[in-house]
Length: 184
Ligand SMILES: Cc1cc2nc3c(=O)[nH]c(=O)nc-3n(C[C@H](O)[C@H](O)[C@H](O)COP(=O)(O)O)c2cc1C
Image (tube, rainbow, N blue to C red):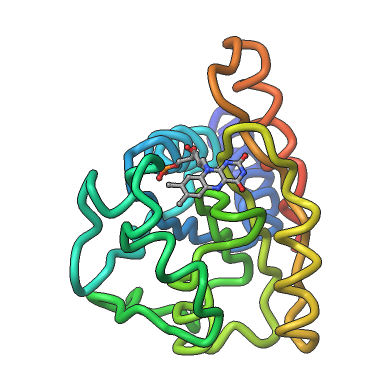
């Protein structure tokens, strides 16, 4: 009897705790894999679902060749109104309270494919936490540009993982992003 009561009490506590967890989706775009692995780590650390934003036309290594100013990424950066097509939309987006959007910083901004994603998916009413990976840029300029373009979104500035991070720096990014998830 005592055991049953204890189990029932434990189940109640667990139910209360899990009810406070907002449903979270981590979406990301990654051309060369760095943002992808960070997003996978974040998903493992938070238990959130994961969705990769992929170009309908996949990005190749040549597309992001920093030595070639004619490469696709530079052409996209030069035309801010261009919206690269996305392969697929996340399922059941409606059911999520929090949506992370991760991306590599290109030209101190989010790549245009992030604009496509934001414009094609209804994110109103959700907490949208952006994060990035970069060579050395901070996320703030990318955040400010998105905020200006989408003033109606509840956009939260996460943080960026810079090139060649120490394990501690990597962990600090995961911790900061986890902390950015608001309680329900
Ligand atoms: C076209 C292009 C532009 C970039 N511009 C910047 C930049 O402005 N600032 C920066 O710190 N890093 C810049 N980078 C470096 C990327 O942000 C960095 O390598 C990122 O981690 C790559 O992520 P991914 O592997 O997920 O694609 C740029 C990379 C490319 C390909």
